[in-house]
Image (cartoon, rainbow, N blue to C red):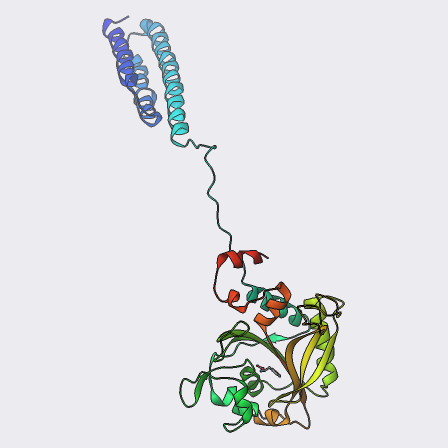
Length: 344
Ligand code: PHE
């Protein structure tokens, strides 16, 4: 057994001990392990050198080198276990969460009552086969009035106080303006529902300068007032409750002939008379009528071939009735204490 071989073995042991002494990470440990045990590492090259020693010494030296390898393996495993444990400890520490801390509450929004009503109406009427059309809020005098059989000198213009933007431009006072846009672009059969904002120079507990309407328009061959009544009765039952009845009262709109106001039996008292219906047992919900022949003609639809009906309702009014809101201002103030009560 050569003296210098033994030296080398001791040196390697000492070098390994030295290398793992202050080891910080398992990545460094892997490198060190490679250096000593990997291909071409110190210990395997020692094995290679075995060829150079006289044959009779080989078995003994071979054993010694094997023992060194085993020792090194065991030593690295030991160190690895220790380093890994320490690394895990550090990770647990850095990722520690305090489960006793109170959670962050996420504030949940709520839909505005107008939106809830619009969504409900859209789904009721979509179920009856209506399409949705949204017209512009800035309109020309023609679409908002003239084409709707309300020329400049027509007294019915006084029914709606209008915000004019110029001699011919205005903020639409009614979603009925959309009727013309639909009929100009689409030939019957027409079945359109048109929600949107409208503007009038008006401001008190039941009126706001900006509010929302929902317009309905049906044009086809053989449409009668009976179809209007049937469809609106169905709408009233779906929105206000199964037992609700509907009645039509004569009214006037320039663009419908005949025109009607539609009342529903009071869903609060069942028609006996209460505060909501002001003792009458009935609540007015919308205006409607058969599309005036002149309006059909203005849109290039032959009134001898086609007839139609239209209806228009105020969304805020429906919301106030349905949710028992007594002041329209609440719908425009954006006060979260009010709005959060309408979580759907
Ligand atoms: N546009 C009318 C209004 O704003 C309502 C209405 C619509 C009436 C359609 C009849 C037909 O008062």
